[in-house]
Image: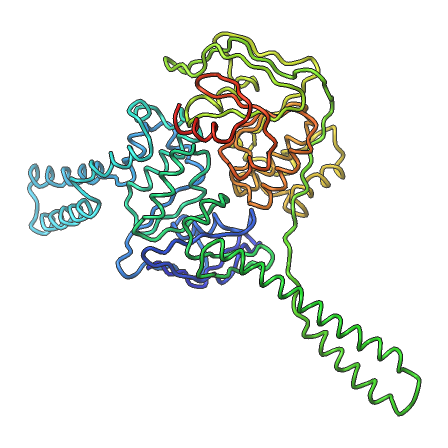
Length: 536
């Protein structure tokens, strides 16, 4: 069992949350919910042992190790091969190397009996650790996981920095599963994934024999895996545990909010009626003064005991304006070809976009969807073919990993522009839920969801008539995703997008789709997309 006892966290003088307590046992699947910036990822970091805190966390009753799937892979691993990255989940090679070194020391030196005993004790401990991690059967575990995560031999030899977002997600999941943890910490495990991999991962987690703690904004995932919900309230800085599924949690919250609203309405009605009576009786008769005074005391007591109304978090106010409206195709691609080294991703691709169109790119992870957006954005150069932008096209690109942000800048520095006054910038930042001293926070300390909102704000400031969106809903909370969908529906320009978020696409008026790697362009059909997302 994992026990979290009265855990609090401050960043400097800023309180993130306080007195968080809960426990998870074997087969418990806890999901952590709350708005972007509420501290969900911070809590996972604390449980994983990567951040200091006040309070206590303990593993008891057979729980020994924790595995953590992060949202973003550390830069220090980008030069590792995929196979080496997955194998570091158990570090068996390192343990074997240490055992060999111990035996070499025993064989090559004249040791005292005390030093010899220390080496034998160390070998025994290392061997016990090796055995507990699967030891000589680990290779079978490794290849079962690799197969399940659809990682082929070509991918195993690639470097982590060469992978697409979806491929990185698959590999990172394989690494954390291979570590065989008793407690599995998952931060947005379905981000970037094609349907085939997502379905496999969902099934794996549902049947996982250890404890699972997840953060996700994927409603399908939340509904499928949860039997406990921890809600972190960013207004009160407190957390509340619900021993139920996510869908049941939503029902309970709605019922509770409805009850509070109804009770408050009833209380206010009674107060208003009593105040009206007091106003009507005052000054009419000396005999009524005591009754009026008694009634006023009753009114004050009622006011002191008013229920708190349901609190609503501030919502983002997202809108996208267009500087130049154009009535012809903003983009056409002809005979476009691109390869990474010897791997050809795009070959003689042809398509064009209509004005005001909602157009999506479809295909499994690794077929070149992000690469195509980067080619159109001018980040990559094609080997052959042409990318033609209309003369009045203003293009803006949303990168799925927010690599367009300078992590060393503060928020206000990142959006600073001669085209906007400070007052206008402050208003825009407020629309995207960055207000007060928050605007001076360094971007590198923001949550992935907050970075996503900042990237959307930068997109908005360009007033483009052509937007390239690469998985724009990854990391966004459910409320903000719905606001974004509405804003994109109202947008007067053209959108070219990559997304595996089906809940989002249902609210997004897609007209046509480009299927990769075939290059076919078809009218949008959800059934075709789902089938194509699994089988090329």
